[in-house]
Image 1 (spheres, rainbow, N blue to C red):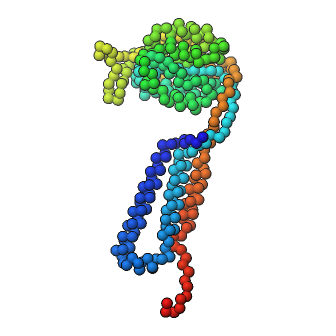
Image 2 (image 1 turned 135 degrees about the vertical axis):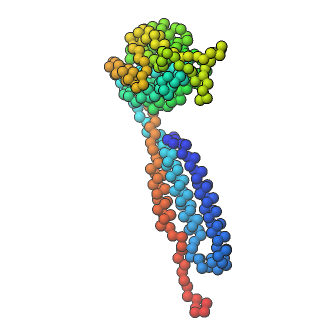
Image 3 (image 1 turned 60 degrees about the vertical axis):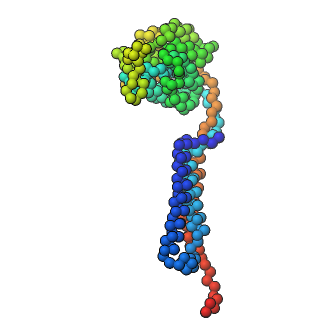
Length: 339
């Protein structure tokens, strides 16, 4: 399977037609200049050792070199290597609130961007643990199944956005219910749920559902993101903010009490998001101390770069173009003194 690490660079191919037009213009301009200089037939006889075919050939070599270099810049990769991975660790699901309230900017650049950045750093620290993602607002759905492919998990993390879920609100209980379904039901340990939200549970049953999660052996760590004082919810870059049905500005506040109760039901802990990343570092340290289990194997394709061959071909073409002369040898034949 062929793929490109930087497919956006393939647009540079538009340079090749531009170069072809440039060379065409240059040859026509040269012909017009020769006509103004003198008799064209006489000039062609005087310069008959100059090969027009070789000039075209040198241009073709340069354009081919540019073609291969553009391909090399896009970094073509071929998935030819299959590996089977078996590791020991625990199952970790991160549920991230993507409701409109997460657009509030009391945690710069926004609550959601801060959460995504911290989770990305957290994934980088994992060693053998499976990671899964849940996106939730008024509803919840699995964004990424439990996997050992941390690169794939970060791709799913990057596309988290409030537009993913149409149903408004924040259903913390729905996120916990979805996590219970994603974990293996037969186990009563090795399961961690990290809940990142501002804690505004509009469903109202999050604590009761957390009790059920505790009976399933799930340890819930809650990370409250936002300020208890409240913050306006921006709708766009023009300074518009969310309003209720009466036209009043809506304030979103961190409900840390609900999150503390959820964590307490499962022997987990509650942390408030800080400007650094101390809270997820502490959660990782807690997970690292947990009993490990052998996780299911994951077979995946490892893409290998193939741009080196294209760069080598481009260099060879440039070298050949450099040493290829425009002039050709013409054999001088003796035709007599007065010929």
